[in-house]
Length: 366
Ligand SMILES: Cc1ncc(COP(=O)(O)O)c(C=O)c1O
Image (cartoon, rainbow, N blue to C red; front, side, top):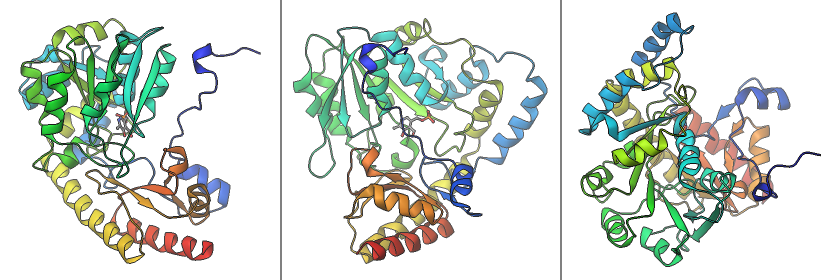
């Protein structure tokens, strides 16, 4: 029997949200709603879809290895220089690149827990050791909580803001206090996959402005969430050109396909779609919060397009019963939040259907 390297012994693979086709097959259902992977229920910008159709004409060619057009558009959009960007096959791809580039045997990498599980998985794949810092009893963490865990082996610290799976945020003040104290030779990754949902909150950090005078930060963003391009796999990192050029050493040259580059560029220009997505998310988030309160269920205040609700029951059981009713969510048992479900904010109809299904399941379990 061939075994993965020792550092991966006992590691469970990432547990992605199940696709609707699989659940339809498995339970003989004709209608299944997926609220498990924090996709945009409105789909993608029509401009992005148009760009993908157009890009089909050039599928026989390798993509632009530098993502020149997308890079230029983003540099313009964020007021940064083109050499401050690195592109990934989703931000997943960038998390992997960070670990491949900066971590090896004997290194340590600090992260909040629970948080996005791919940090620990990729740290382990690189042969390094994940050091997990538990969230407080309200599922909150302040980045300064990472500081006592720093040793002379620490190479990378992960911050996830808003945090997945809790949906919570830390403030600009909390972030700055941390950045002022963290040694300059430690790379700080600020994963802002849900940035657009939180950006309007006054206390949410403006991380980009930190790039002006700090050389040890990489900010991760993605087109998978509010831009609705999860299926195309495109994310980007922003940081000091010296960090970027190190990552270019390990980046596969054609890691962002032509359709993804074209769609991402078109999406960036469609503010109307982003604003509409935000407005609907806000309304349907409020609907879910009200519905959970009415059911007597507590939840974590979320600044994203998902919400973690405490069912007070075994989450695996609730998760599995919901599947039989055609609702795919994420169970807290795989997220480090036992008893909870993490639910993506869908359309109003999807949210109403989910609330009805959850009420039915909880009634059955009472
Ligand atoms: C916090 C966080 N980071 C990164 C990702 C990866 O996103 P993608 O690879 O689709 O860009 C996700 C996806 O759910 C996420 O929640």
